[in-house]
Image 1 (spheres, rainbow, N blue to C red):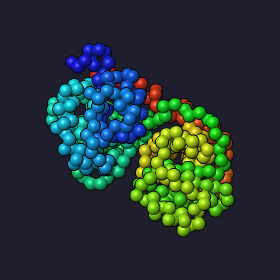
Image 2: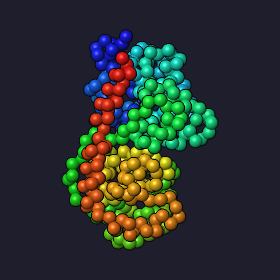
Image 3: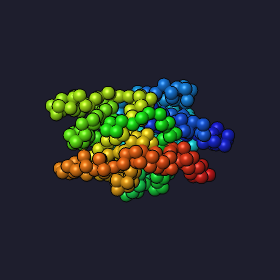
Image 4: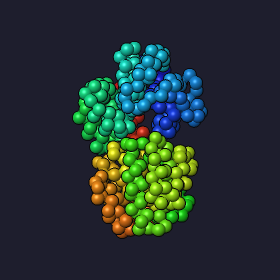
Length: 364
């Protein structure tokens, strides 16, 4: 029995990308409640060094592509297995199943670890990777079946996980740690977008949507945060459309800068081709933004059938009536509605408590 079990607390190892703010949020929530250790496929954000001493962190310093086929990561398996055998944890908590979940499953099998596996799906590991072919589906099924408990942030993704062989699935949004303060005045036609500038997030559709709105609203402006391989082409397109004075690309932002943009913006645009419940959309809603979202099951879970924003269908003429639909909304009322909805449904803390309660039940 481990020291964690003897002391009455769980010893848990987070396995994921230590440079991700999302994994850091999990670490902040778990650290006061368990004996926390962490393995990162990359390095660690500075705050991890404050949360956990060196002996409780293992950085593998690879560059996983989160597509599931990360040979460099699997080459670190001997180091991971030995470290985990020495740690002797109660639980391995893997984030993103086709990379870090595979690592946890392989280490448990190869080193005959007593630890059980909990797996948290992040979206494309369930919604995209298994569709790449039979070998990816096999791997995803293997990892899901190795987990005693899994978590999903949407009902839609939970159903897909069960169809792929998952046993017990807990469903809750990867919500906010706290509601943000309301300390800025909204600009009525200021739009904000902050998803990655990569094909899966369809930033071109964001520009298309804004161009429709801008044609009807002369004061409309768009701030595009984040970065990616499509940025140069998007900037060229903005210039070609004559929108250079109304669209601003600001690159990657820290949490404080991002919060300032949410606070001023009235509209939040997120139109990916595949997604689960997005933390960015929850953040935007908590700041009183009205979301314009692609027509995906998880987005309908978030805002209903346009009860808390607008669903934009993925069709040739879906944006034709967007100027009229946005103008018809009472954005001020929805700011209050959305913030109240996040307070009731989108905070992280209660769900972490429920997750840990279930881990303890499964450990007895």
